[in-house]
Length: 87
Image (tube, rainbow, N blue to C red; front, side, top):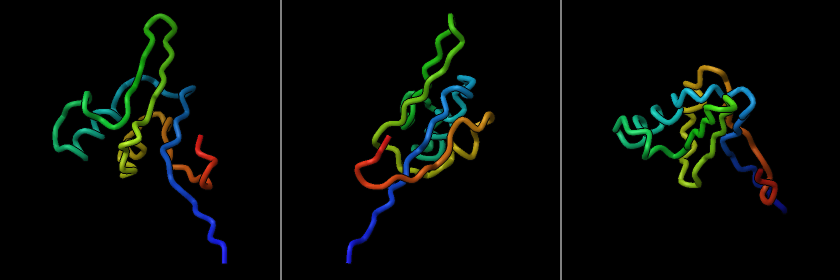
């Protein structure tokens, strides 16, 4: 019997990210019990000249989903992929 493995990941929709960094703050509070976005498991990069944001998720992410829950714009979600299809 072959089992198909579905893995989870945080899916980022950069086009609707506002760059507010709420996800960084929540991540550090939930996972490290410290309000320190520098140690968060995801990073928000905001370009003040183009007003564009981009979020990168660290491989150390534990997929707790709190960043998704607290994102005010809905730019983050939890998605599933098959092994070898990670985006």
